[in-house]
Image 1 (cartoon, helix red, strand yellow):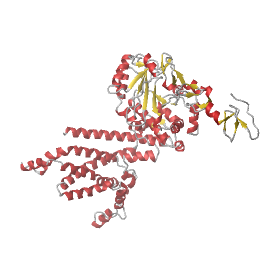
Image 2 (tube, rainbow, N blue to C red):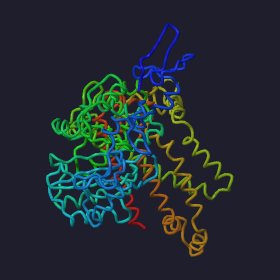
Image 3 (cartoon, rainbow, N blue to C red):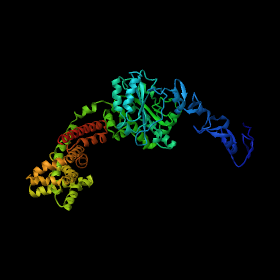
Image 4 (cartoon, one colour):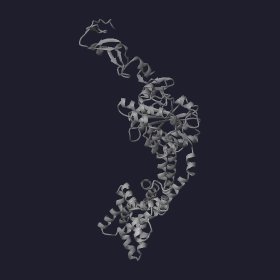
Length: 610
């Protein structure tokens, strides 16, 4: 195809056609000098890798142009119709390769447990752009069509969510595969918990085996529609996994041996791009911790299989958080992102419970400690004091807030329209005023030198000398409760005024005609009708009291001598002052359980009164 190039100091000849080249109208390619006409007419580019090739070296068909390397490494042909297929689009049955149409013709329609290569058209469930396809391997109870039918009946009652495949890596089990769903759909709509309970009842195991894994596929176009931008995000995912390998190894519940066998790492590099380049050249194939062999998805293979629902959900949430970190950080910021900072941003309840089982600090790797954080809590005098203070705040502030709000509302609801509106505004003003501004005002009022309480107290003779209200253990917590009350009554008053205004006036008038007192009319007629509002007010007031934090932080910082510590403030102090994130998570779990129990009791009592 080429002739020897003939050159002088100013003359070049094309090595393809031998023509004289004028005005630098040529390209140096593959060690040869080619004129632009030959480059256009006798070469093309591979549609897979972008490399330029001679026309005579083209592989592929009428629909796609391929170089020899891409053809032999990324493509195959249907054993039946000889159609050219990308490996991601190929189906396998009994050792043969098929296109989708031929595969459907070959396989038996009634088979509930499909061959490993079975790939139906994906059905997407949920609103969003990030979808998770789940592969959950279960083992130990056989590849049984009856068992498979029972699991499919549970999963696919309302939609075609799940299918089942064989897997040669399992001793005596099968692989449960979901259609792609958003994380909300997996948590709220997909009957995973029922599926897992039934699989355990059938005798299957997942986490108690050495064979089973939990693999999560995330669609690449969730990161961007542009392939270059997709690769940038994926490179940061790889960097995060390598940078925090020890922490993720603990979370994965796999042994180092199992990880090396089924989900090998690419190896640490100093930049995301360097790890991405290594991954593209690496020989791990699909048995990589983050598998990039799939054309449409990124597969996270790190995790051990599980039939424990909370662990399963925590795993999905962890992968979702890793994707967020990769999308919303730059290469530089993800390099600076510590595991402690990553964990500190976690808000998902199930994932918080999981991290509470670790001793997580800023300056050392996480260590799984089981229930040690919880045992330490109930031996920690500061935490027990904070728990006591929190309960005092709840027990005192909730009844006073509710009773005072109801009394004020009962008075102002019968006033003229403008007067009712005026009082509602007055009482609601502290709610809409910034908490910092309100707290600063109260702090000056309690000032031990210039505060109005000391001024009035000494002038009237109630006190002999100024009192350091916020600096004295005897008074500090009472001051906090007083401030909390003044900032908490606004919303209940507005709600009660609205509820009392909707009470049927004809019933009250009829009771008055029958000689009922105001108290009797209130208790027998008004109270039952405002009971739902009361229940709502009690619940939100209880939750707000448990979560008392801003006042403590701005006024006392838990002092003096921890006398105003609350659980919320101690969580903040432990996690963000002492950097004990696992210990803080454990306190958060205890607080959440307490709130849930009290709320359930309140709803139960409210329903029993209906």
